[in-house]
Length: 82
Image 1 (cartoon, one colour):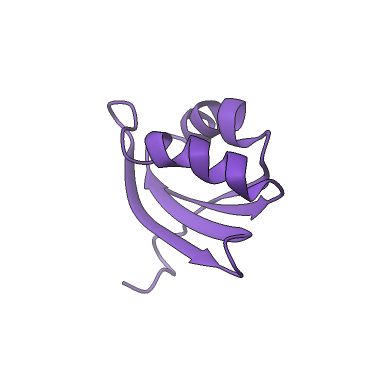
Image 2 (cartoon, helix red, strand yellow):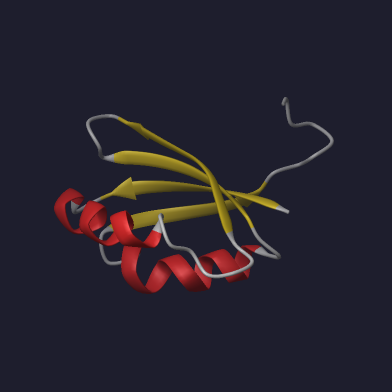
């Protein structure tokens, strides 16, 4: 399944420091498909592929939760435009 996360970045320096390693070396079974950075690096949207939202949340929150407010959602495959 595909999971979209919106990161409202509250501490850009810490967020990008933590994200640089996490986003390039995810655990087995998770794949980062897209990272879109907007608004002067204070807003970022990512799309992951994983077994569940919980898997992605459990991976990202311990590190990125200290530097951003994160909103998670499932992509509806029937309505997504590819």
